[in-house]
Image 1 (cartoon, rainbow, N blue to C red):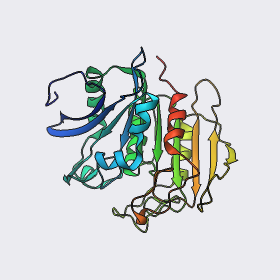
Image 2: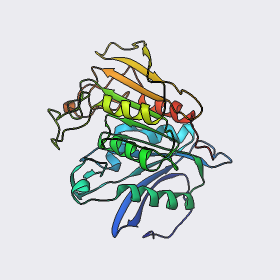
Image 3: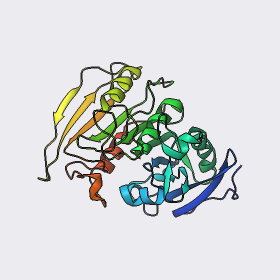
Image 4: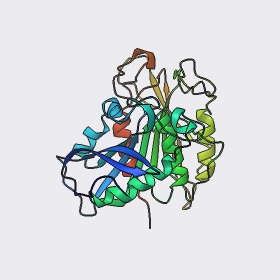
Length: 297
């Protein structure tokens, strides 16, 4: 049960709590103030912060809520767990931190949110999506695997799979963005030079190979070098693994050459995260990708 009465949420920002497995969990909900509510209910995008971060920091990091305000989708920024309010993590397989050590069931947390939020704001159940950064990207992967009956598509950024394999209950459309110069979650896998966890992460290739197979997608991608609008030392390759038939889902990979542990299109506030490309806008790509996919009944 929630710790606050169920109430209809007006447009704007709302900080809410819910009791999950004896813990009070926080989450922020942004209901559009400019767009009109669709008759079938709002699309909703769950956006997960990185490790040793938190929901308010993720809001500033990606600003996806601002796009939702005008484009017309609800954004939810859940908070992980941890002893320090500004340093939370997710239990997303091998990673990370407090949430992993305490065996926090973050999938159950999201399941509870999926029951709670539609009581507060009209949601289109066919248009529920997940994205996230780093440990939050890993959480998106986990939700795509474990809750494929609830999420229509996922779009991890800067975070690879946290498990050896995946077996979603249905093909799950996937889009992944990752920098080749990421020093926290390395493209090649292993321990990143700047990694706080010092975990031996899986590679980007490991994630893509697993999901191309799970999605029954075409194993031979179409590769496109995207035009560079800005000379900022980065350039983008887009790998598209198309659907191979009706029981299939696409996998898209943006390889950001020269990119760091950052959100494409947004300035990095910390130099140690590396370069943030201006030749790719993560928010617009995520919106376009999610807009192509609905969960069919």
